[in-house]
Image (cartoon, rainbow, N blue to C red; front, top):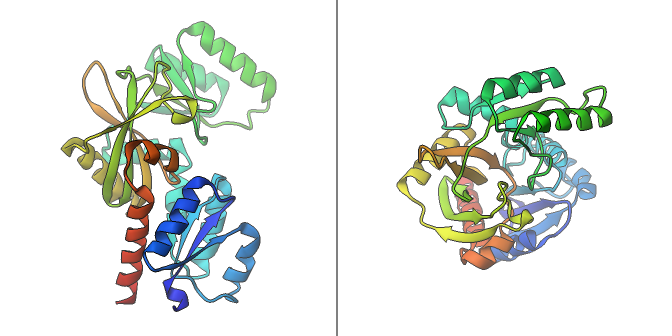
Length: 289
């Protein structure tokens, strides 16, 4: 087994997701091992031989970008690419990209000050949603139901961040969804599974207790995900879609470059790790041909 057939799994820690991935990669006949940040020096120095591919699964967005950049500059192929991870790490960058390429997306404004938050909410109307540009699991996402909510958010935030170092944020139109949103897992270019995340809460993250229901990958879902992949390039993504209850239109809410899948796979039954491992094996075979 040459080094070109070896896959490194860049991790902060081995969670159930990464353990499933290691097993699936080995089932494909590949040599796969974890790569911790402390081990990165050996790889970029070339002491271990160039890997065929490195799967980036670091928990910290900043760490994931840093690791993938260094590996790419050392000549390694990473999945996902550092530029893709950077875009997916920033909801504001995604909004700009979607707008430029005509991807259906909630109307979104950048705000670089408290005054601009007020102005953007006034422009978009109430309710509106304020989000940090970076973050997962619904943390920091706030629904502005009325003017009092805006004042409370600004007052609380300013008391903790008077210098405004946590800007920018994005202010987004509120989409009235029918009690669920959709998460579509994309491997390469293919949507391998779509699930509804059902909740009575307006936020439908599984970490906040949303129920998972598998649904059909419709032509509309496939088209939207294909549009996203055309922009970002093939990779491993969790594409979040939301349906506007009023219009019935399906919108791309955001794209995650490090989607978790172990918990939901146990419920919907699709072997996401197996699909990803097979894609990696195909990529390595194509590179060797």
